[in-house]
Amino acid sequence: MTQHDRLLIIDFGSQVTQLIARRLRELNVYCEIHPYQNVTDAFLADFAPKAVVFSGGPDSVTRAGSPRPPASVYDIGVPILGICYGQQVMMQDLGGKVEAGESHTAEFGRAWVTPGAARIDLLNGWFMDGSGREQVWMSHGDHVSEIAPGFEVYGTSPGAPFAITADLSRRFFAVQFHPEVHHTPNGKTLYENFIRLAGFKGDWTMGAYRDEAIARIRDQVGDAHVICGLSGGVDSSVTAILLHEAIGDQLTCVFVDHGLLRLHEAEEVVTMFRDHYNIKLIHADESDLFLNELDGISDPETKRKTIGRLFIDVFQKHADTIEGAAFLAQGTLYPDVIESVSFSGGPSVTIKSHHNVGGLPEKMGLKLVEPLRELFKDEVRALGHELGLPASFIGRHPFPGPGLAIRCPGEITREKLDILRKADAIYIDQIRKHGLYDEIWQAFVAILPVRTVGVMGDGRTYDYACALRAVTSVDGMTADYYPFSHDFLGETATRIINEVKGINRVTYDITSKPPGTIEWE
Ligand code: XMP
Figure: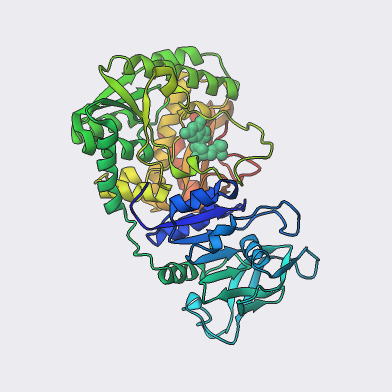
C-alpha cells in the first residue's frame, strides 16, 4: 500500500464517483474508491484513511437495507464529507431525518445555494463573486428534513434547506449537491478546503510516484525477465519506459504489427523505442497472417474476434522466444480496476467485443506487472512527461486494438487500407495545421464500402467515398461530434480528393455517442 496520506471514498453507486477521485488526485491527494460492501471495520482500520468521502448513490436511505458505511467510520476521528446520498446517510446515521422524494423537494440539474449566517473554512472562496450565491449541481429525490444533533446549516437552496451542513467539532461535512461535477464550477475549491482542513500534505505527485513505482517494480521482479506488449499508445508506452528505467535489459517489448496500423506508425514506434530508448524490441510483422485471415470477412464482430484470436497467438509465439520470462507487463489503469458499485451489477449488452489480452498471463504461466494500476489517464500522461516521453506521443489520440479493420466497413482489402491510410494522414495533418489536434478526443477517416461517381478534369471517376470522424469526449463513453468550420471541412475534402487516388467523395459524420459509437464498427 502507498506510503502517502490516504483518503477513502466509500462508493454508494453514484454515476460520478470516479470524478470525486479525479478532483482529489488533481489536488495531489492519494485516494481510493471502495464499494460500501467492502468497507468493513477491519478494512477501515487497515486502510487508515486521513479523511473519508461518502459518494452519492441511487438508493433511498428511507428504504430498509439501503447501503450504509460501517458505524465505526464515525469514531475514527477523521473528517468526513458526505455528498448527496452520502449526506443523507450521514444525517440518518447520526440522528437526523430524511424524507422520501416528493415532487416539490426533488431537484435535478442546476441550482443556486445561498450562504447561512456563519462562514466556515470549508467554504473559503465561495460566495465571492458579488451575486451572493453559488451555482451547484443537484440530483436528488429524497431530502434531509431534520439535521443530526451537533450539525448547523451553512448553505440552502430552494429545494434543499440543508444544502450545506457541518458538525465542526467532529469535522463532519455534508452537502446535498455534487461538488465534483463540472456544473458546480467552484466545487474544486470545496474539495481543496476539505483536504486542507483534514491536514493532507498534497504529496501525491508523478515525480514521487515515478521513483516509488521503479522501486516497487524492482522489488517485485527481482532478476527475472519481463515481457511487455507495445502498441504505441500512451498506456503501453509509459509502462514500457517505466519498466525500462527500473530493470533495463530484463525487459523485452513485443510490438505486433497486424497490418492495420496508420501510415508510418510501425516505423515510428520501432524507431522511438529501439533507437531512441534502446529498449529490446521484437517487431513482429505479421501483416500477411492477419490480412489473409481477414480476407472476405465483413461482419464487425467476426473481424474483431479474428483479430483478437490471432493477436494472442502471435504475441505468445514471439513471447515464447524470450528466455527466462516470468512476468507480463500490462498498462492497466485505475478505472479498469475500480470495483465500483455503479459499474458492476445491472444487465448490459455487448455492443462490441473489445480487443484485450485478458486471458494471456494464465495461458502463458506468467505473473502480471501492472505499474499503472493506481493511475487515471491524465496521471499516466503526467508520468509520461516525467519520463521524458515526447509530447507528441503523450498527447496522441486513442487508437483501437483492431486498428484500421474497424474503420473499413465491409471487406478489408490491401487497396482500401492503402487509400484509408493516405486519407487519414492528410486529415490529421489538416487538424494539426489548424491547431485543433489537442481539442479533439479522437479523429480519423473511415473508408466506406461504396463507390460513387464523380468528375475530375474532363473525366468520369468511380471511386470510394470516405467519412471523416472527429469527436470530443472525456472518457470515450459518451462523445459529441466536433464542430469544424465549413472552411476547414471544404479545404480538407479538397485535399483528400486531390491527393488520394481512389477517393472522390468526402462526408463528415455528425453522429454523437450515443446513439452512434465513436468507431464505425
Ligand atoms: P466506441 O467505438 O465503442 O469506442 O465508441 C470507444 C473508444 O474505444 C476505442 N475502441 C477500442 N479500443 N480496443 C481498444 O483498445 C478495442 O477493441 C476498441 N474498440 C474501440 C475507440 O477507438 C474509442 O476511443
